Length: 118
Image (cartoon, rainbow, N blue to C red):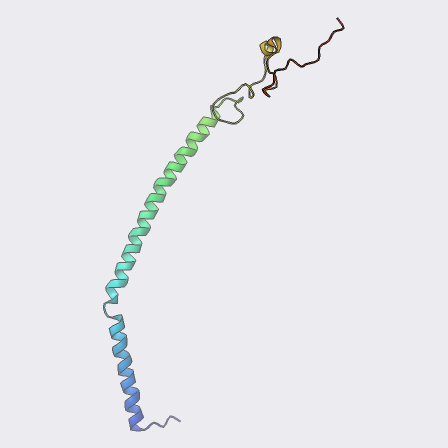
């Protein structure tokens, strides 16, 4: 089936040896290179995991502070800015008596209809 002459067998053997030599030269010293890249990747990954753990700790602390602040917040503070503005608080009896801005729109409520039938 494969009938090679002796010259062809020599050429096949030389090509095989040439492949071994080229492969040996290409991969020489590569053992240290891939180990160095692997070790640098491992140290980088551990550094990233450590920084993420620190950030996650900070995130949890901020969430707990935010939750405790919302529990202690004034229920009248609609926009949760820590300040109850006149627009956010309900008008009291004194506001009605003094004729102040009861609906919090910034327009005085002196245009209310007046009952003149008395």
